Length: 343
Image 1 (cartoon, rainbow, N blue to C red):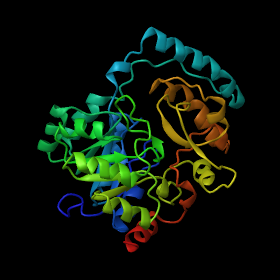
Image 2: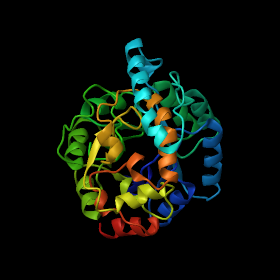
Image 3: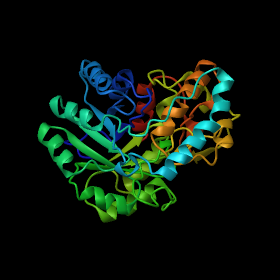
């Protein structure tokens, strides 16, 4: 990626739910990379407070925002019935820890407009979007305010749609990536390319914008592959989850290094949106979880929090890309330096 845009080929993926922290941004910067924090699940006030805390570190950084799916707000009566049935199924999980499943929240747009307004009033260097496209007016307003805008895609079709809005760059996420899939068009979850590098090459042939590769990039060899395929930078998440500066829950960090976990799978069980996780009991027990983001996220939140407090990884969302076994502890600064030293 050109020095004028990001200044590094290494970007720390924004990981919502507390994994991305100001400390992680600082450590990544010290290792030669660019860090991101994440607005997902936070109130606008919490988001702006984290921006202030990160800005105080005097390093460049970006903020990631979830785009709400207007077609799901509110859900159809049929979809709502499926959510109610899933809520009832979760009562057994709640009883395990003595917690309660909350009522359904059917109109949560993650405070979309308030967050955009806050980012316009107090711009950060980079703003990335996931789960959809923000729309041309938002892209242009953020750029006018001084932010560089990044749209996330999972296919050539999505990349073409994103390019029409005029972002500064596109993050290309392969299905091997850990956590939530960024797909927003039908069929976007299907593995249309065997590897991240192959998907990057497909998108590179279709659009002229700078590309950021994401998905199973766990070492300098994988980094070299995506750069050779046409990416200007790589976005790394799973490789940082176990680091000292990561805010991931301890059972999550420990599970990534536990040989008892032998595979990952795409699941909707935790949030109602497809995401790649280590396969644990919760994933196995709720293979038929319905679509319903973020309603299901709110339903399972008490169970996940209680499981974490109990040190139980089997009822926790253990987001992990397919290369999770290479993730290690230590400082994120050292992880980044190892990637870059291998180039």
